[in-house]
Length: 626
Image (cartoon, rainbow, N blue to C red; front, side):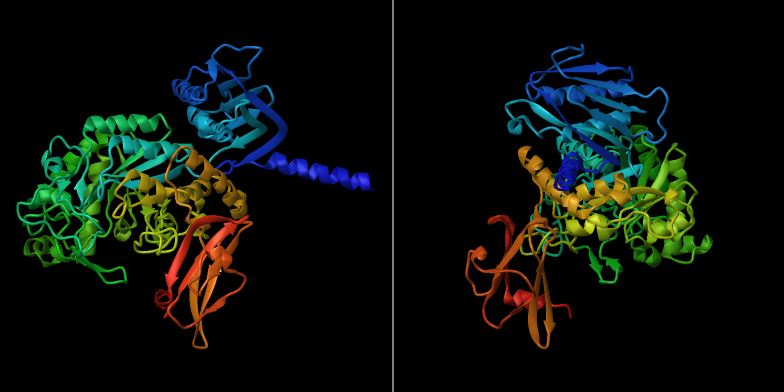
């Protein structure tokens, strides 16, 4: 009996070891075989397809391997392990267009797919089975755990959006952002190219858009009322734009990473940069400026707002549609993808409704109010974009009127817009603030920028793009959005994007049943090391305690929590430090009266994880929910 129990235990241990990996997103099926392939000096590539894209993706992987000092050859050798790359002659219906099968034994690697996109995705998985960089590679060769992986995505739209209007990012920086997306199998880059703070794409027929609209006065600090409005004749040195040659270069670069770019021209609101160039396209036709992030609106806390400066195109002016026809003609010619994003969000109607010429137009056309007028505008823009051979996608505000059948909706105001659109049989991309706004702060506000709200890694991981009662066939997928009011540099853009984008990647790629927080956070910690090895800025706020304050019987209490396995939270409330010589957290505790601070930090094996959080009693009191 003892031998039987021992055999069973050893078998279970072996199965556990074989099942372990740190691949993100989680593959559909991973089976370890207990073998190990070691690459010491040479690796042979056996390319069994003539597909140009598959060969390009293979060459990218060859360059990755050669960075480790490995010599590669395209001739099979008996003294070196080999990797074969092939496209299925008979399509494997399970894999679809982006799936792959990867097999690793002690002597060889086999990567097969239906199409080149699957080959690319397979290589991203294979890279995760190798060290992140040569500097962390073992001296005795690269080792890959033997396994068989069958993998394919749950959704076809797996996107990230980068706002380059609030802050401009160079071509090289955009490419850096795309590089990291590709590693985690995102396949849509939503490029937010225009807004109140800068017009970033060259339109040759409308040169003022970049001569004037791409530049603004220099300002520092947070967006809002503390940023002064531009003075008359003040210089506008801050900004930049992408020439059409830049755009073509980035499009090809993304295509080489299996990523399609969806450009956004945000209209009719969010158009101050365009109106700075062509003020005659506004209702009041007064001179405008490119916003440097000064206060030009009042928000009332219930989702309603008032613009203090007009920032919307005039939907009653035929010249606006002539302008947009020129813009979308050139955009459609540049971008080969099927969708163009027309924006459509947060458009203030007050200036329209107050303008006598606009009101006359509305009366003539039986348009009751600003909302109906925006619906008229959306319909006109739909016709312009579809006339260029493209499909339209817009933020969920475009649902206010009737949409053309193939128009897609990007749901950002929670899930309700996406649910409504799906029930109207429109394609939907779920991108709700509640789960997917990557500009929201990740950790405690004492150590993180505050912008609107907080969104933790744990909350992001609970995102489910298909709401109950919605037909999944209308959900194209989902997307994380990075608005850049408080993000002026690419290192900080990456910090705000990751690791939350890792959770979105797993949500959008992996089977719903495969999602598991405990497994995911363990893998994420491995990827923290990979980011560190490549010198990439990344947030580790998930390590830090979450602080909840509440009142009971006239006393103030504190709860601390985190989602990190095998960790302990320590705290002090008596102004002593270091905190790990204080109290180990077990249950909620009272915050006594007095001039004191809460100090708290997470530890594992007596080593600090994440930053120390220090909060004064005065601020703790302010955090109590009224």
